[in-house]
Length: 163
Image (cartoon, rainbow, N blue to C red; front, top):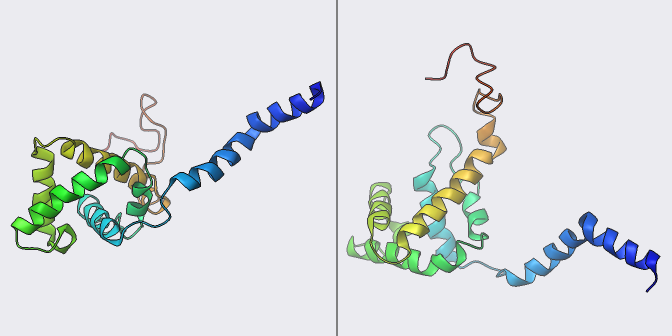
C-alpha cells in the first residue's frame, strides 16, 4: 500500500466512513424484532410518565420504541418488566399493560421505592431516555413559547422570568 492509498483510507475512516461502517455493524447486534409484550409494557410506562396533557404523549409519538434501542436499557428490561408484571399480578391483572393508569403509576412508584437489585435504576433509565426523547421531539418543542438561549444569558424573549 502506497502513501496515497493510506491517506485515502485514513480520510475515508475519519470523515464519516467509520460512522457508516458502524451503522451497518451495529444493526447486526440489535434484535430484529422486539417482543410484543415488552413493547406494550414500555409503551404503557411511557404513557404514564409522559401522557401529554393536551400535547401528544410519549406513546403516541412512538418514543417507547426508541428507548428500547438504548444499550443501557436492554440488560434491565427482563428484571424491570418482571417486577412490574408481578405487581400487576398481585393487583389481579394479567400484566403491567393491563393495569389502569392509577395502578400503573402505583406500580412504578413501588418499583422506584423497591430495594430489589436494579429495579430503581431501570425506572430511572426509562425516565431519562423517555424524557430526553419527549422534550427533544419537534412536536413537543414547538408547543413551548420559550426558544431563547440557555442560562446564564437570561430570558431574551421574555420581559420577566417565567413563573
